[in-house]
Length: 385
Image 1 (tube, rainbow, N blue to C red):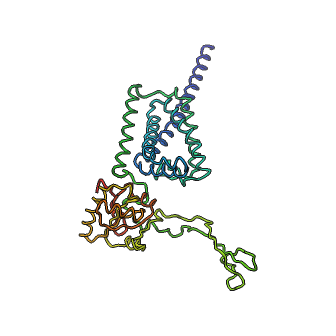
Image 2: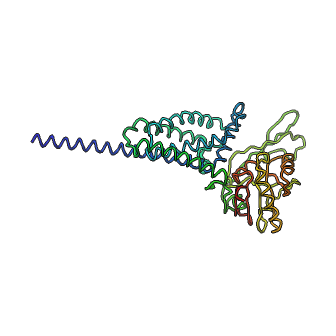
Image 3: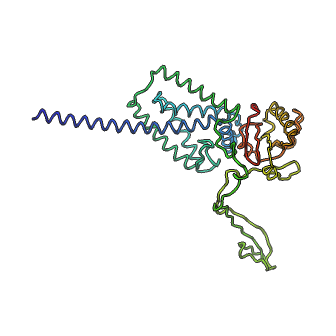
């Protein structure tokens, strides 16, 4: 009788241990997979768009000012390093490679990112952190809260990593890490020399720019409040559009203030503008052109490839034969444009556009974008056209 009871108690105890073990295993699995997904996604979208990450780093450094604004040259290597680091952390969490070391490195990384993203959330030096590139844009506060969650998850793995069995031998793990580093850097270099393999920006192939600039029916528009300031007998008073002294000549107009009170819907493309050499806006003319229009995108002529511009001249000659409009779009000043023309002998016309827009259109300097009836049909790095 006692022997049977003892056996039953032992069996129940074993069952409890197994249940606890399964719960712990499942919990650690979920935590590990979440960390893997976040780091892999964050690293991958940066790796396929190294120039986008470079621009974001430059924004950060310029916003911080002082010493930081003088070291923007580190932006590109920092972009490659960050994407590679995040991607390796994610793969390590996924495949259970060097979990203790990976957790320590992740924790050190988060000790930098937590105060940084808190500062960004509080003072908004940049509009978004760029942590997921253009694939997923979240607010600065959402980024900070996300980093708190990641830090907690990393601590969990660091504390309980001994309960997670590795899949590979230690020597194999180091070989795999080395190969993953090479793969990540290779993806970045390939994307830099050509174009990102996945385009998350509004100007992707197949988009009709005219349609992407429209505000859909029913969507809210920006609402502004205008305040009119008038003066009478030395006393200034503020009025609204509805109650200002329109027909009272005793009041003298002094000033006007307009303030955005409610942000409306912003279409995917909202700042595409082309200004020709005569300062005329030819945007609609080109977007509604019946046929193909070619644009060489050169956001900064001082940083552009002269070889790429000479290749563009050959495209310009072919476009003229086909009677297809061909323009270079830049944000550079006329002096720099003239210097580039003198160095390369190019003859195609230049128009002005916003530098951020040009960087968004194509990750190349120069790059070729061709539209047909307002729809983007082709985008190429200068090495490929």
